[in-house]
Image (cartoon, rainbow, N blue to C red; front, top):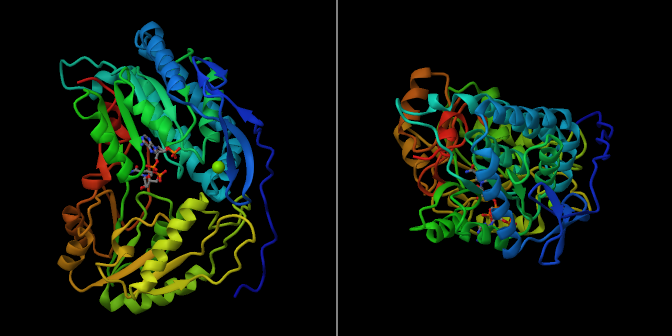
Length: 478
Ligand code: NAP
Ligand code: MG
């Protein structure tokens, strides 16, 4: 129990939120042809923040037409070094408005301000800076003799867990390669995508190069189904990803899918234990566990199991849950009521199936969607909590006795996005890493990201890469 309590330290909320947002099409704010609007709420207070336009098929059509015109008229023809200047300007505008963007992201989505301030926003800017540098060097991403060519109009669909960052991951390489874009943010977190549209207007990005259509899954489906879209880049659930793959099959559209995960986080008994515990905590409680690559299956060497459970039990008591705008908050709000219900249902299934639940003891705020940092022991491989993505602050702990068993259990999942290994022995790290079927393997660290480093999965975690030169190629014709 802490002797001293932190005084509240909330960030001021003078983020410029408009009462109502239209769609951003052809460089202008426009009313939706559907005539419909919906509210985006602050999940920490359940209060509406703004009214958001609902884009239907006709609006998607207008956005795609604007993107096509901009592609043919300016963007594909522009000197690559000039394209780079626009992307640099977007990057600088993000850094200039970093505080406002962090507040918007936290209010709209529920993540702690320290995360949006220190992770989401700076990394988003870094992606624009990085890909701006590539715009006039694209031939270096090609095989000898190949000429770099854009694909055309890209439809980009992003989820609610990293709204600005996922948009940045998609926009920056697409723009650098000369494509134009229709971006569809998630229904619960449209505000930072709309702020990006404002930034695009402020930096004089030619009209139609970036269009933002807000709405729900229906809006996304209309974008996927539009025949003049040349490429779909989707980040979201495996279920929707599969539906998109089915509907784009045979159409000639290029497709990348960044889907779900159920990452194995392996801790050997010889691991540097203080660091490993912090890695585990970061791996699952970062962003309330709303992380596709979250280390949600902890595999611990049997001889260290007891020690790790004791340490984790203590450690989660020190996490501060509450107002996401407070600079001291570690665990913010769950993104939506729907997601909270999903987490509760899966946690209930874990208890019913016989696993043992340990939770931080804290008083949950009266309003808003919150769930305490939790973990399960006595988990069987067959339990739903060991197989299904919970996408919340809930860890499942399993054990292993040999490195081979660790690998076998780690790979016993339909997903393949990320994995982590903690051991004091470098050779063991390398040995295990080569057998893990995951797009990213972190050794003695977790959740490390850099724009130059590719990220993506395989099997049910999707295909295609974002980041680095690999991410660039996804936006070049071949
Ligand atoms: P989701 O339901 O699949 O939604 C993702 C996006 O797709 C949202 O913008 C959503 O719109 C839209 N959408 C929904 N139905 C659609 C349809 N039929 N056609 C086209 N678009 C449609 O996923 P989520 O629950 O929001 O996000 C969480 C998932 O994303 C998790 O599984 C997580 O692992 C995954 N994720 C993966 C990565 C990665 O890089 N691999 C990164 C982050 C998250 P609405 O929200 O407006 O309905
Ligand atoms: Mg919201």
